[in-house]
Amino acid sequence: MLGTYAVLGQLLLMSRIVWLERAIGLDRLAVWHRWTGFATVWLLVGHVVFTTVGYAQGDRISLWAQTRDFVSHYPDVLMAWVGFAMFIAVGVTSVQIARRKLQRQTWYFIHLYAYLAIALTFAHQLAVGTDFSSDRAARAWWIVLYLATFGSILWWRVIEPWRLNLRHDLRVHSVKREAAGVVSIQVRGRDLDLIDAQPGQFFLWRFITPTGWFQAHPFSLSAAPRNNRLRITVKNLGDHSARLQRIRPGVRVLAEGPYGTFTAERRTRRRVLLIAGGIGITPLRALLETFGPDDDVVLLYRVATADDTVFGDELRQFAGARNIRIHVIAGNEIGDDRTDLLGVPAMRRGVPDIATRDCFVCGPPALLDALKRRLALLGVPRHQIHYERFQL
Ligand SMILES: Cc1cc2nc3c(=O)[nH]c(=O)nc-3n(C[C@H](O)[C@H](O)[C@H](O)COP(=O)(O)OP(=O)(O)OC[C@H]3O[C@@H](n4cnc5c(N)ncnc54)[C@H](O)[C@@H]3O)c2cc1C
Image 1: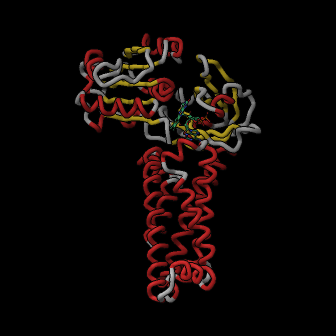
Image 2 (image 1 turned 60 degrees about the vertical axis):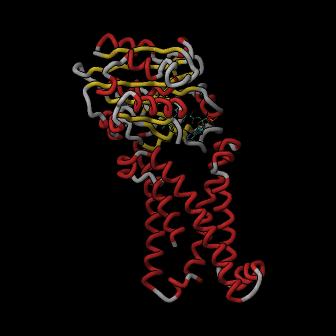
Image 3 (image 1 turned 180 degrees about the horizontal axis):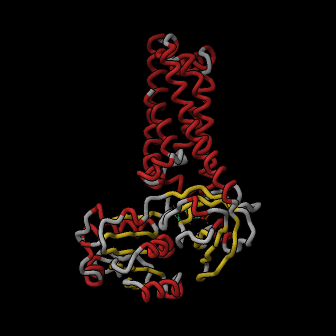
């Protein structure tokens, strides 16, 4: 039963319920989903092992004979075994070592088998579960639990995105090269102010081309939404982002969102430090639009080489028009905490009042982990550190 509660809870964590996402953030929900997932698999393994061993000992037969007995004489248990094998496959392909070897799309499609696994294991719970077979109230509760979970998924992951896309009719408007392997894509649509997307948030984007329609990828807004336009800026980091470099105006786009809590609402201070690693500049560039003349803003922007700087002209305009200091730091290697260009002494020298600032950090996971540690060493309280990890 705990295994089932965990499975359903896990589905709810990824069901995109809007208030849950706003309160916690999709990235953190994804981490919780991951760990609940492993707990689920272990609970289900425990269920199978202890039930089989217990029954085998009671009947004084071998484990193999007991398994055959379950499968051939207990209603719906064969189906449950198939579902269990699928859960194991989903669990195994989600451990780090397997994830590194598998393409994300392959992992994702295997992951979808979890839905089938849940469906296959459902019937045996009611048919042979001692808690349910003679208790109508318990059966009703169990069915309502499943219906509520799948209803949430249907509503938030299918109906809501479908309504949004029908209402706004999104299409690629224009594509602009920003730097080598980086393009900005303007998406146009109807009544986009109704979406209420904030700078710093992201959408899951699906570009309806023969090779792209089946994949939804997260990209942050790289400018505040205006004039019925949404802008994203995409770096070529793999197959899909490479294809987006050549996307044509007019292509239909399906978006799901807005998601994320990396917004100006998180601010607690007038002084702000923004730190971007590479393409992590995108949500920070959008956030720059939320600051007023009284705000004191510093942007540290790390790029591999000066030529990789994205939004150079736009950043200069912000620096000219508002109280925003911008430092572009060239050098890709993340060194140690003391010698790195974004290390503890360097940041203390560059931003002496760092502990009094809200810090918004975005970039690749390795840089983010290093920066979280360094900001703590610099005395920045945890509640002043806000980050967006470009990894779900
Ligand atoms: C919240 C968020 C915001 C992001 N914003 C931007 C942005 O503004 N600009 C930008 O260039 N990149 C952004 N990214 C990263 C971008 O999503 C990936 O670079 C892109 O999906 C890579 O896909 P690919 O097929 O080209 O590369 P792959 O080689 O398939 O993957 C490269 C990396 O991206 C991850 N990735 C691939 N597909 C997905 C997916 N469907 N969902 C989540 N992660 C995936 C992989 O795990 C891997 O770490 C963001 C990621 C997240 C999580």
